[in-house]
Amino acid sequence: MLALDVDGVLTNGQVILGNNGQEFKAFNIRDGLGIKLAQEAGIVVAIITGRTSEVVERRAAELGITEIYQGIGEKLPVLHNLIEKYGLSMTQVAYIGDDLNDLPIIKSVGFGATVADGAEEVKKHAVYVSPLKGGKGAVREVLEFILKSQAKWDKLIAKYL
Image 1 (cartoon, rainbow, N blue to C red):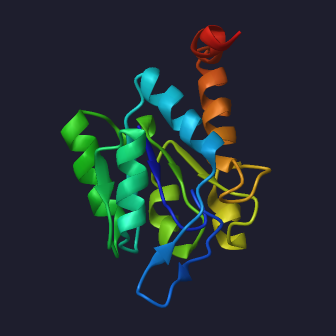
Image 2 (image 1 turned 60 degrees about the vertical axis):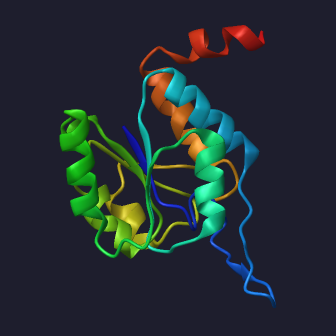
C-alpha cells in the first residue's frame, strides 16, 4: 500500500482561493501516471489528508483512488483501519508526507518518505527523501524507486517502449 498526504506532496503546498469560494490546486501529471503504474502493479493507493477539498476528490476519481480520507486530524488511526481492511502489516506500507502531522505515520510504516521541501523534522525521521519537491514529481520519483526495487518497473513500462 502507498498512502499519501496531498498538500505539499501531490501539490506544491499552495492553496489558491478564488473570490467565489473556489479552491485551486495544481497536480503533477507524472505523479498521476506513477500512481496508475503502481496500481497496475497491485499497490493499493490511499489518500489521507488534513484538509477537505472537492478538487482532491476529483483528482482521486480521475486516478481511480477509492480510499480517500479528508479532514483527518489524526491520520494514523485511519491507516490502521486500512491495513486491517486489506490484511496488511505496517511494514508493507509506504507513506509520503511533508509536515509534522505526517510524522506519526512516517515513523510507523515500513517505508516513510518525504519530499525535498518537507519539514526538517520529517526529513530526520523519513527513511527516504525524494530529491524532488512536492507537486514537482516527487510521488512519481518515490514510486519509481519502489517499483524498481521490487523489479516491477521494466515490465510496467514495456508497453511504452
